[in-house]
Every structure is written in structure tokens, then in C-alpha cells.
Length: 289
Image (tube, rainbow, N blue to C red):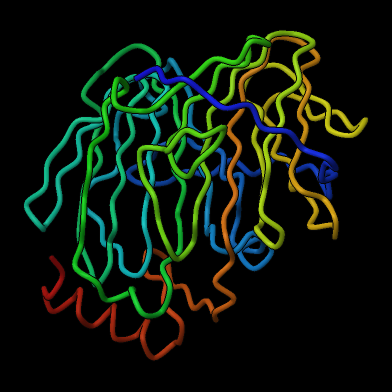
């Protein structure tokens, strides 16, 4: 869905606080992923709990998928660059996310779901983000939406920068999903060599980006492919300027921190240990979904 845009400018760019490579782990029934945003970064990048990057043309790296497993207390956002993944959950939802599509699920008070590849060869590539819910919403009803590629708003600037707006708002374009509490911004940005992209960011919002093709520079510091850069929260900075050294693609993510306690046990993310223990008991008792 292409739209017209209003140009935006950044007076002072945030700088890069640190660059990280993530860690390779096996998840689900044996899917190989790069866990870029790990648990020790949850407070720093509040309200985001996790970022997984996955990508392989070897079926053995993904074919086992993610059989049924539970979630409570947060949202999952799956963005597929290539490949097909089938979702089924205990709330009765079913959908297929494929090339360029997004699957947004609010686990709320509890849901058990599966995410299984609908291919046995070819490239499977994408990202999954875990977005925290505020305490008041952690026990809300589960919600699910499939967003096909053609329903993700996109635009191209005169510079040649092409942007897909998964969540939030940029250059006057509303993303596919909005959230009041955390105000997430989630962009997929494609930059030709030498092009700079400017993105305003509210003061206090935590922000990071992940380069999955090429290399970029922010305020003189390079970020190569397969690296995540955490942007600082310097006073007076009103956004970020990102310039491509070569043809580049990256995702840029930002959000308003909840500043609430985080108690996590695997797929349960609550505010207290007692709430986590209750989540485990409820799941074992079949009270999810």
C-alpha cells in the first residue's frame, strides 16, 4: 500500500551507544536463530523484550518449526521477509504469514499457539519481536491479526529511501498497527548507497536498529551487516540520521518505556514472581485461550 508522505527532519541525531552481534540459539523444536535482543537488555530497551533474527535456505535450520507453546503478558510481532509460516492458537485463530507479511499477536491473559513452516525448501527469513504489555493490560483477552504485505503502508522518498511502516507513524504515514501504551515504531528501511534517512524520535523513547543487508553510518560510527545498534537517549537529540555506506536494508524499532518491574519465566512475562507462578499453574490447568 503506497502512500504520499510529508518530509521530516532531525536537528540533532542520537548517537550509537553500542553495537551488538547477538547470540545463536536453538528454539522451538530446533530452529536456528540469532537472538539479537537478549534478556539482559530488557531494562535498557524497555518495552521490548526480545528480537530474534532468522534466515536460512537450509530446511534443516527451520523445518521443525515451533510446535504448540504458551505465552502470557506480552505481544509477539513476526515479520516475514521470505517464506511461509502457519499460525494456530488456542483462541481459535489461524493464519498464514508469508513474504513481506506481519503477524501480530497479543497473548494477554494467555494463549497457546504453534508457528510451523509451510515449506520444506527455499529461503525462510524474518524477525520476531516481543513487545511488553503494561500491567493493566497483561490479563486482557488474546488478540490476533494477520497483515499481508499489500496492507503494510509503504512510501519512497525523493532520495530513493523506501520505507515500510509496520507500526507507529513516520513522515505522516500511519503504520499497520498502533499501540497507545508503548507507542511502538517499527520500520523496514531500504537505502541506496550514499542515501541518508532521518527519523524523529520522541525524547525518552528507547530505540535500536538492526542491519540485515549492507552497512550504515550514524554520526561517524559504522554498523555492519548482522549487527544491532542501540541508540543513546542523549538530551536534546530529536531523532536519528542513518546513512548507507552501500545498498542497505535495516529495521528501526523504538518505543515508550513502561518503567515497570519485569518478571519472566520463559514464555511468561509478568510484573511479579507470584504472577509468573500463577501463569504456570493456569497453563498446566488448561486455562489458557
